[in-house]
Image 1 (cartoon, helix red, strand yellow):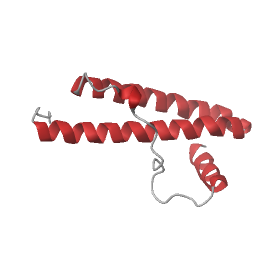
Image 2 (cartoon, rainbow, N blue to C red; image 1 turned 180 degrees about the vertical axis):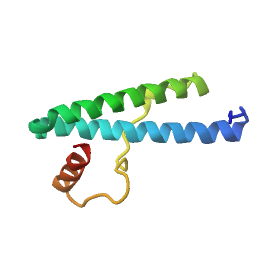
Image 3 (tube, rainbow, N blue to C red; image 1 turned 45 degrees about the horizontal axis):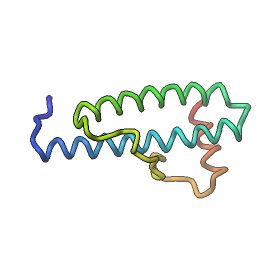
Image 4 (cartoon, rainbow, N blue to C red; image 1 turned 90 degrees about the horizontal axis):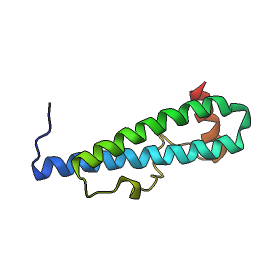
Length: 102
């Protein structure tokens, strides 16, 4: 189903796209930190980073198509990128993230 370019639908789509981009940026930041902290898992983390970078590029391209004046590079990282219930500690986050990437 193609989105029509009504103001409401375009704004809703842009909001969702920017939110997705912020979450991808947040996860990319986390993966970058884990690569330094967990050198034993560098191969799995590099593969995930490549997936996230490809997803990020696709989102940026889509945002530019919707609104050429909006600069996707200005979208910051979202702290709430973690899906579901977030672990209480950083070590718990790292442990669960690495367990999911294997």
